[in-house]
Length: 331
Image 1: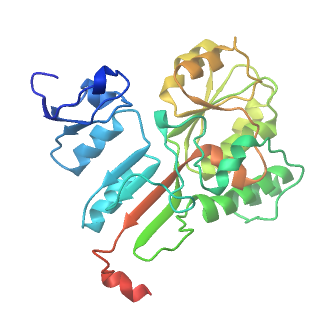
Image 2: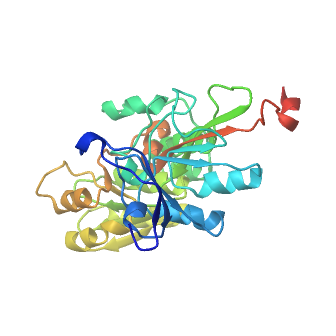
Image 3: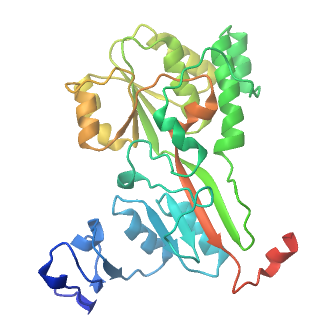
């Protein structure tokens, strides 16, 4: 205990077994304390005080973990603020925070509470972690847009199809929340949150299609993008096309060492070189637990845009003791 902490319920080891502990509740924990910042696989609850909802969310997000978060409130404005600011994979409002059910609350976290891309158990994207997806021709889900029209005029038919597919799937999959079960009295919404930023380290072997595909997806998903390069024959052409297309992207010529030193500033890394234990980029990303997207861009946005998003499950119990309130009129 810190001098300002106290046990409301003091834990103890049972029968001198250091692997079996009774529950403990601790009051007075402050920001940065051991039991605030450390994930403990023990039945210990540390109770912290926050001046308001905003500070409470900041306390939670500071831990670096993001599996499950719970909130109790009758104010729907607070529900909205909570689930759009808390950094967690599973969010529960006015209900228990355990017992996730397939499709209803597909389960999985973000940040240090995820492995790899963190695809959720109990939803359709989970299987993609076990596949090597390749594509020989464009999918049928196409949606013409300003970018695809320009690419078509430039004679870049494959990139035109990529743009159409990315826009279609961004609009119909990645920008919407879906309730797969429609249970009375509950909202169980599956949706996506964009990654904060992406750093793309170009390899000598990357084609113009590879480079523009990454830039295209990041711009359609409106994600901050750094393109780091040292040697590639298509850089100038890529810059010219980005200018014509009005893409937001930072091109930076730098050494591999310089790029390695800034990996910590980015949520996700794109790097298409085959993994090698001696590769400095893979080493540093591993040390920092940063995800590397190794696959080259696909034409199909349904799969490609998964790399640019985290998954989110929100489960809200909106009834009060069976009373649906104004929502009863929806039925």
